[in-house]
Length: 50
Image (cartoon, one colour):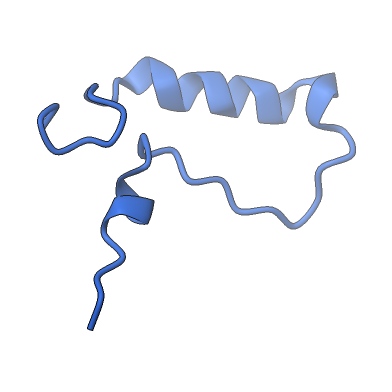
């Protein structure tokens, strides 16, 4: 998996947990209606030219 990830790493449960902790904390208080991709850039990489 690491070889195809844009950032060269494999995601870990801790990566998702860090985002969840931030969303639950006061730092994210002004964030509304957002979509957060927690995939190390894989979604961006998978945009294919037709």
